[in-house]
Image 1 (cartoon, protein in one colour):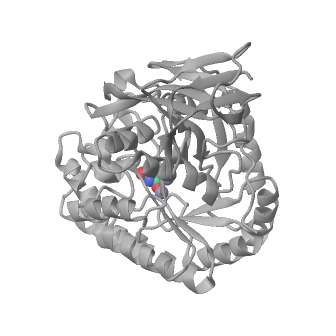
Image 2 (cartoon, helix red, strand yellow):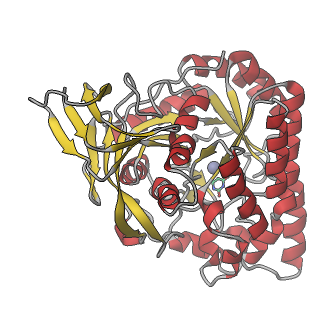
Amino acid sequence: MDLIIKNGTIISPVATYRADIAVTDGKITAIGRNFPEEGAIVIDAGNKLVLPGAIDAHTHLAMPFGGTISADSYMSGTRAAACGGVTTVFDYPLQKKGMKILDLINDKKAICEKEACIDYAFHCCITDLNGGEILDEMEKAVEEGITSFKCFFVYKKEGMMVDDGTFAKLLIKAKEIGAMINIHAENPDLIDLNIEKFMKEGKTSPWYHYLSRPEFVEAEADKRAVHWAKNLQSPLYIVHMADKEGLEAAIDAKKEGHEIYIETCPQYLEFTCDVYKREDGRNFVCSPPMKGQESQDALWNAIKTGGIDTIATDHCPFQSYEKDWGKDDFTKIPNGCAGIENMYPYMLSAANEGKITFNKVVELCCTNSAKIFGCTEKGSLTVGKDADIVIYDPNKEFTISVDNMHSDYDHTIWEGKKLSGYPVMTFSRGKLVYKDGKFLGEPGWGKFVKRVGRN
Ligand code: DUC
Ligand code: ZN
Ligand code: ZN
């Protein structure tokens, strides 16, 4: 045995129990008591919780977007992830029109091999079918362990939007090859209509970012995506759900037995659209935007009642000077916020304060993401799985500040947020990569996670 974590309280999605964990060659090899300690590193986790490393199933690292590139590289983004208890990230490589997706994936793999500090997987964003050849390429991508593909109903000008016909083709193909389609659901025409009107009226502050993409703009697209998925009987994963009406429609479809999965993000659970009235409102500009209190309450309720399947971040930070491009025109603000280091501590703090259970947090941030996306080696503290382990001190108080984060951005929407409890150690396949505020990992340690398809 290489590593023994003893005296801790282990959290699974369904149980909380005291036991020791033994790790050999990066795998969990035993859970029990009284393991022989000779030659092993022994960690005393007394009075601490022992949790699976989280999976952030939604990040945009080094992504060209909004006239620039998102501020975290694969190095700094995965470094920050490790320091927030995340041991696997799912990034979203973005296909440029005309590009082959296998080339895109190979390019990203080459970068991650050098830079990634924790394990990584990809959902591939498809913007163009290249006359149909991408549908064939999807099949090969699945064989290579990329089993999910994203498309956008928005970002027409940016060349990222797909129309309903393309979306339908992707759903049909995905079903056939055991893959999943992830959808960014907002209605582009309604957004354009609203923007045109506000620009004519000189309404250019970040508040109008929200008003150009309010609840019903997202709800229409959520419902449309669900409608297609239901009728084509294809699985569908809705990313960053933020509105009540769309959420309820998707939950209804799930109840009818359709394979629909719903992700939301901590920013929608913490902030409402009121942030866009703040002096620093532009820093909160992301799409979809934060919604009203009713939507936020509905999201928390769906977490408690099982309607929401996963929590991920949509991590896509930009520097202050880039956010400032939209000081006088919200349409010029690059969309996206930071979150990769905050997701797990935020959700665990909610559990520590009694809002939800720790078991629920593990289900949403680890186990479900692994199951839905075919990561057979990840997502729970079980014998045979990778030793991706977080030790959490429920008594440690922590206040988020850009100064104690490990990303490359220069501000965070989470500045000043007080958390009750905080991760104190993160192990990636048995290697200690974070301890007590310090990153201890190394670029190049992270490995590509080859996933299994659904068929
Ligand atoms: N929304 C964002 O806010 N940023 C990245 C991409 C997206 O869809
Ligand atoms: Zn999106
Ligand atoms: Zn995203």
